[in-house]
Image: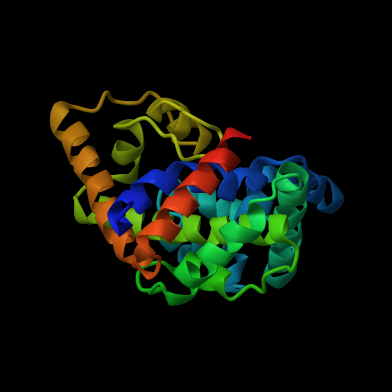
Length: 251
C-alpha cells in the first residue's frame, strides 16, 4: 500500500511526461503556424497566459528555470495573441493531444476521477501557474480530462520545486545541470541537454559535489511538499493511481 509520499515519488515521472507532452506536440506546432509565432512565444503565452495580460516580469517570476531575457523576449514577442485566447488554444491542444495519445486507454476515466480531488483540495500557495490552470474548465471526455488534470498536477509540482530550489540557495541553472531529468516531455535527459533546451548560454560549468548533493536534497524536499497533496487518496486509491499511470507512461 502506497503512502502519500511514495505516491508523489511514483507518479512524478509519468505525470511530468504525459502532463507536459502536448507542449511539444504537432497540435501546438499548428498554433505556431496558424498565428505566425515561434514555439517559445506560443509556449509562454499559452502556458503562462493564465496569469493574464501582464508584464513580462510576472511571467519571469514563475518561469524560474528559463533565462529572464528569453522569457521577456518570448512573452512580449507573442503579444499579438491575447493571453486568454492563447490559453484557449493551448488547452485545446492539450485535449487534442490527450485524445490522440490516450484515446484507446480505458484507464483515463479512472485517472481523472482519482486526480480531481487531488487537484481540488491542494493548496495553491507558492504555485501560481497551478492556481491559474486549476481554474480552467475541464473537458468531459476521459482522455482529454485526464491529460489536463495531469498537466495541472505537473504545474503544482513545478511551482513547489522552484520554491525548493531557491530555498536551497541554488541558481536555477545549477539545479538544472546537477541532475538527470526524467519527468519531462523530452524523456530521460541529461542536465546539459535540458539547460540547452531552456536556452541557457554555453559553456556550462560542471556542478561540484556540493551542488549535486544540494540538488538531490531539493528533490527530496519537493517530494515532501507533494506528499500532503496525495493524502486525499486512500492507500488503495494511491496504488491504483500508480498502476494506471505506469500503464499510461508505457504508452
